[in-house]
Length: 299
Ligand SMILES: [Zn+2]
Image 1 (cartoon, rainbow, N blue to C red):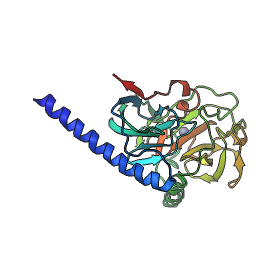
Image 2: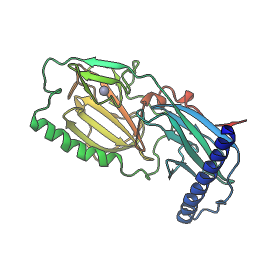
Image 3: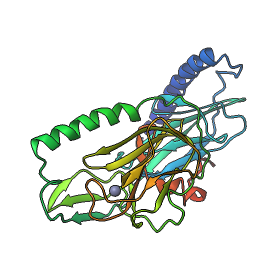
Image 4: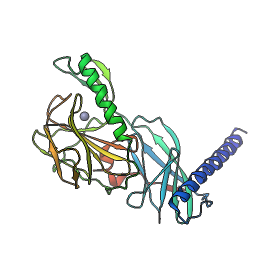
């Protein structure tokens, strides 16, 4: 009895969501004047599992749009990519892909990832208990960064996957998504990957893009923000020198030098990737791109 109820609920839910996608697709179709049939919704059972901070990939012929969280977006390299923030709750999301033969919907299951605990000691209190002046500065900096990372997601992708490495020789990274304490006090989780690289080493752009911000910030130190299109931004922090905002860079171009500016206990490169609102583990797009989970048709 319980199973019957669940099945019918699932069916209703699926039909309901498919209807939503058809409606949003009609809007897309009107806007883009595409000739794709908006009413063909496949009955296939597409599934993928992605860990927190990971990315899923959905291939297909002639993909025109992709959908997740009620929003549609452009494919990259002919495939749909679904980035999942490392703090996102476990559970199931509906995803969609539009091709020349219609709309396919599928399920993405978010599975847990283990994140490390980092307990960091600083010799003084500057970065642990902020003075009023530093707190005001930090809030002001955040008020610039937050809208910046939410802008221009519709710009075409300037990148292909895999991305390049942020330095010519890349050691094993650590600390992505870590829970952290500073001098014993819990602070925000770590949104990027740290690489132990010596000061003065060139930092390189992981993909072509536009340098939208290059500034010294309280926590991040000297940082460079690059917009790569399709809502993907790369952030390189704690540098001792940096390129200027407003410049256009190619993949592999030098954007600065490794340093230890801001809240840092020694020279290292912090690389963050923010893709359409999700902080993801950069390694998925750099060194582990071959292992990105792919949406499969389940029996
Ligand atoms: Zn870091």
